[in-house]
Image (cartoon, rainbow, N blue to C red; front, side):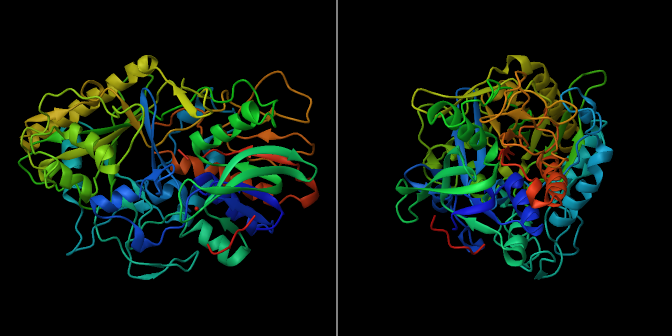
Length: 573
């Protein structure tokens, strides 16, 4: 690691990876600070014991999945070179046009403006609907069962674009990394052992490292940011690879700094910089407000189908349908959801410590809790109605699904007295949307019973009191105004109107000494879709334009990209 770079990027998920790759491609010197480590495909877990060690636990293990527990919401986020792409479900949907028409978005940011960058992200990640590969790999039974249930409910289901490689073994056309076709193992959540999942470490990051000199520094956890005469200094802890919980302090200077450590991590770094180290005291009061969960709802499905479904077969998500209700202001989108084998083994009662009599959601809680060794003051990760949900049905007859909707986006992130991140979120203002989502679940379950004679469905707003999120976002407060001006921070004349942003940064950085906060991952509002492509697209577009600037025109800036949230450089800062 050098002492100074043109750009220092914090985090290697969708915000950081795309930004870093495109700026390196434009000739800038770029360094990524990533708190997690690199993962070889052979290291991804498959047994229960291996899964436990793949969890990120402070002072215990550097896993690539972190399970954050708050009072009323649980959040899954990534840690590792590639960020959340290591464990996400691969879906790349374009934001509905009407979402971008809502007042939370700047008036200029429309689908037409974003389309070229949607195409660019689609090309880089090779996302497309799953096609059968006969005779060995027909469409998963889960895909066909979902399509049949949605049709019986009067809805149109479509296979969704997913970033999964299905061709013959070949080098990735952008990075040269050898990929094998998807083997339908269903372990997307636990990392892909065939490199068929087009994760960021195989695409943007590998390309930029091998071709454009991008430096990635794993096990470098950013602590806070302060102004420096040459730009901004990022203070970090260099984690000891052999002894989790140990580390040594270091720092690096960037003429520009991009904060893209996830919606939780980015906000935490900025809050620490404002409230603990006091190095960025003029960050706005709106920082941390209007946190959105993207309206996610996990652990739902139809149980007891006579037709075998094999929920662990195939990519984790393959198909979805719009279940929005006519006349409602809420959007509801439901997809199939496959579980990895260790999860299904628990449901089957294969382990002595888990009984067949456990309900489905109780088993899910056990899997995420005791089986993974998670310990937190809020031990009740998921609240249950103990009404014998599993009822003796085998998991091969379970049709699971995931719901997303437009929630209120009114959560507040802050630091508690110990300096730890805390989330204050009241589901009351989003309950109308969740109830409509539950109605969509019930439509699927009812239709599934007609088609599959399923005996009962599981509707989470009653069965699961806690919310589990995999797509959280937006925590800098209010939308940016139409000319894309952003919040000013230290060493600037304060604009009294806080304008934190999640909108695409599609303009060059202006001259000046101000730190400009630019919020990417925290969406202007929930999109009702998997937000990954919505996150990558603005970054690709903005960075393209930023990279075209003459170097002298690049202001010293802090940009908060925040992506809920990734080859060979050796870093010793």
